[in-house]
Image 1 (cartoon, helix red, strand yellow):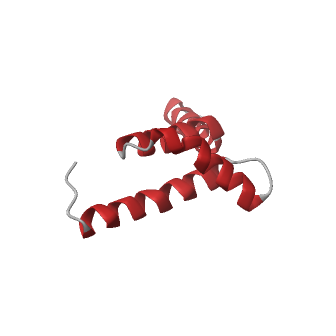
Image 2: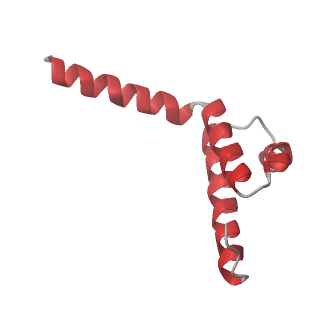
Length: 84
C-alpha cells in the first residue's frame, strides 16, 4: 500500500471515528442551540431523545434531532422575518 492509499485510509478512519463520537455530536447540537440562543435547553433535548428512544443517546440520534431542530428554527426565522 502506497503512502497516498495509507493517508486516504487514515482520513476515512478518522472521519468515521468522529461521526460515531457521541461527544462530538452533542457538541454540534450545543453549538446549533447556542447559535439560536437556546444553549440552556441542551439537556432538555438530550433527555427528550433518551425518553423517546428508551436508551442512551448515540451520535445518529443526536445529529437527527439537531437537524430537525435546526430546520424548525430556520422555518420560524423565515416565517417571522427574524434577523440574526
